[in-house]
Image (cartoon, rainbow, N blue to C red; front, side):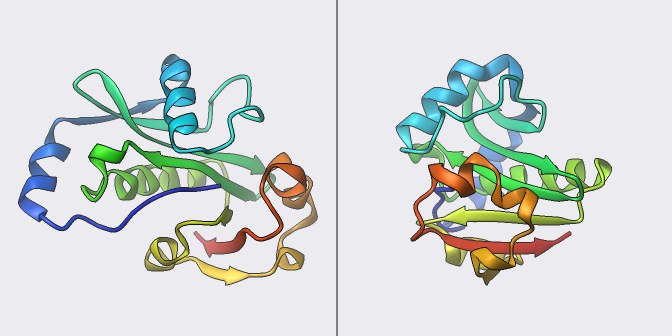
Length: 161
């Protein structure tokens, strides 16, 4: 599931903070990723052993944001999108999603799916549409996120890449 807030209210402040941001592979930062996800009350028990398809935003040596995908043939399950509370509204999540979309396309992913309880409006602004669980391909429905981690009340969304 995903937890985000709105876009930056102060563009100049956001631009200054983003100048110091590095986007990197998540694996070397596994413990910080887990800590951030737990702080945002997002699932961590079903994270992959290696975070090959996860990226992080690093500012001043600390993980300030994370996003990842699980790949199921040409489908990607977007998950674990989170930004530290004090760093929200600065465009960090948007930058992570842009980079993750490029990575997804390079790996042959044509469609993203996600589950969210807190951020449907944010993802609608990013081009996602609401769908039903029945509209999700079977291989994605078999993921732990769909099958038992996220509640049935979570909103399901889709984006063609």
